[in-house]
Length: 397
Image (cartoon, rainbow, N blue to C red; front, side, top):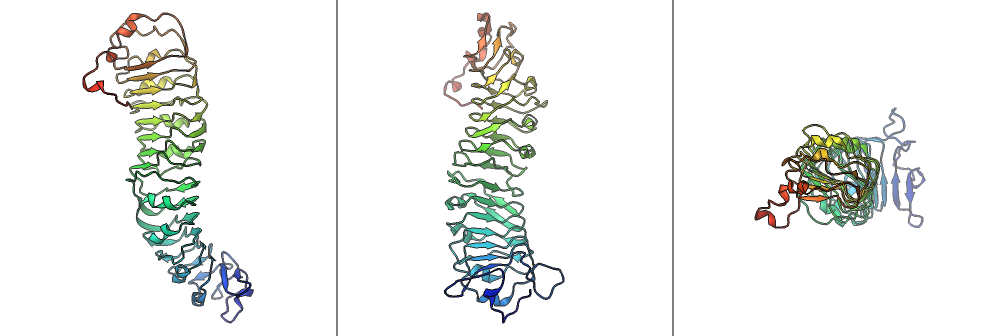
C-alpha cells in the first residue's frame, strides 16, 4: 500500500481515529508495510515523512520506528500538544530535539538515529515520563543527572553510546525509586558515579568501563553482580555496601589493578571469597562483613601489601588464625568477629615485626583455642604508640 493524499486516512492500517470527531489521534507506521515513492526496498518507509502529516494536531501517539526515514526530524512531531508516546527508533533521522509542546509524554524512544546537539530541556518537564531512550545517537553536551530526579515515574533511562558527559558533581539524594534500567555506557563518566543512599530497587547498574569511583551503598539493589563488572579496569573505589545483593562474588574482583577500596558489607553474598589477588595489588580496604561467605581467607591477600583494613565479621568463614598476615606493613584493622575460625593464635613469632601497625584487633565469637601469651600483645606496638593527632576518633579505610 502507498500513501495517497486523497485517501480516507482513518481507513489505513496504523491509523487510529477518535470515534466521535474522526480526528487522527494515533499514527503507528513502525515497520508497517506502508511505503512511499514506490520504493523497491520492500516494507519500510523511506525518505522524509509526508508534508500533509503536519495537519495532524491531535496525535497522542506517533510510531515510526524501524523504517528508513533519513531526513531532518520533522518539526510536527514536537508541535503536538497532546502527545503521550513517541517511538521513532531505528531510522536515520538527523538534526536535534526541539522543544516538546506536550507536557504529557510517557514514552520517548529516539534511539539508533543520527540525532545531535544537546538534549532538549523540555525532556525534564515531562513529569509523567516513564521511559526515555536516546542511545546510539550523536547527542553532545553535559547531562546533569539529578535533573531526572523529579521524574518520579521514570523506570528506564538509556543515554548510552552518545557523545554526552555526565555531570559527576551532584551530591543530592536522588529519588530513583522506580528506575529499573539505567544505561550510561559510552558516556564520558570518567571520574565517579555517586548514587549513595537512594531508593534503587533493581539490579546493579553497570557504569562505563572508564569509571573510577562507583558508590552505590545504602540502596535496595538486588540480584547477583553481573560479569560486566569485570570490565571496570580503572575502578579505584567500589562500594556496594548495605544492599541486598546475593550469589557469588565475581572472581575478577581480586584482579582489579587499580582498586583501593572494595566494600561489599551488609549484603547476602554466599560462596567463597575470591581466591586470586594479584601481586602489587593496591587494595587498602577489604570489607565483606555481614554476608554469608564460607571457606578460608584467600592466601593471595599476602600480595596486597598496602592493605590497611580487613573486616570479614559475621560470615561463615572456616580457617585457622591468619598468622601469615603478621608481616603486613600497613595492616591496621583486623576484624574476624563471629565466624568459625579455629586453632591457636600463638603462631605469631615473638618479634617486633608481628602486625607492626595493628590498632584494632577483634577475634571474638570464634572457636580459637590454646594459650593467649602476654608477649603477643606486647608486640602490638601500634595500639600503644598513639600520637596526639591520632587520639581523635578517626575512620579508617
